Length: 344
Image (cartoon, rainbow, N blue to C red; front, side, top):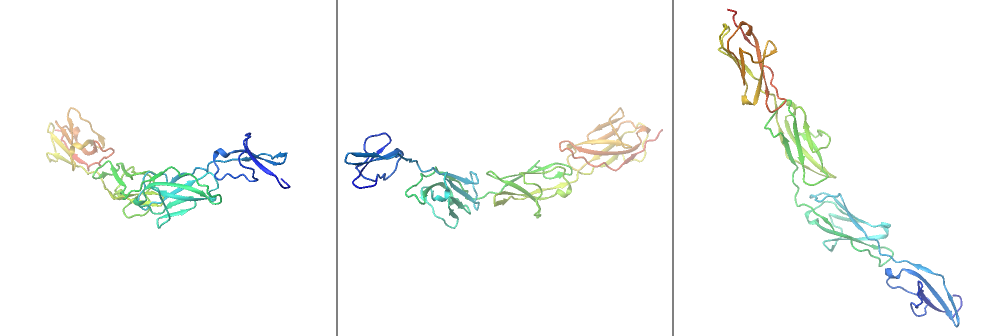
């Protein structure tokens, strides 16, 4: 108040109890939520007293920071990059940040950089595993300090496994026309998979954990490997050998090996194929027409038997084979074998 000899009395909200001894200043040394309210002062001298208007004082807790990591992975591998961010709902440039791992305050080193609200692990090691926390101090409003965040756990492996590469079906070799699927798996999440053949550096397909050869050809024979990538980190699998070859070529023979047969004689044709003959079913042709068994012709596995020859059985015979459980594997036809049966 202008003039001298005034005494000042302080009150909060509607309370009539004086807050302090008469003084022009009222100091709250360490504000708490309880101190929020409407304050006014009363100036007195003699029998004269005058009340001021109200002054709103609002006290709140410092903002609570939240700790996040990027990328959002449960497990990291050596040399990967990890970024932790201390998020605060105010201007982040008004604060300085403190970082803790397993309750010990951190400072930057060759692998850890601290910049504002960010902690970056540039090349992860297993020693970086632990529980991380952060808190913030206001740069201009000392001693305003936030509480620590809840702990965020980082788990960094002490070794990096190779991606697991597999082949389906797990055949020793494939026949032309068959489908081949290669699969690449890496422990953890967020991986992209890239496929390469032999020493070529050109990627075979768009990134996918599966590489499919829909109809194998001889050109597909080679050593395949996959590369698992996330961010700037990558690791190669071992090699998977894929071998593709043509189906075996059957050979057609007759028994007996005569050039001319007579009516009622027996003739046996055999479709011989390298490998287990029971893995195949056989098709027979005479003069390019597919044959089926009848009263004079019996078909059993790789054998065609003419039980009682007739002149009508004369002609050019061929055979081919289809694999019973490796569809669509089919051999080529044999060369024609001529059977000549006399009319009398």
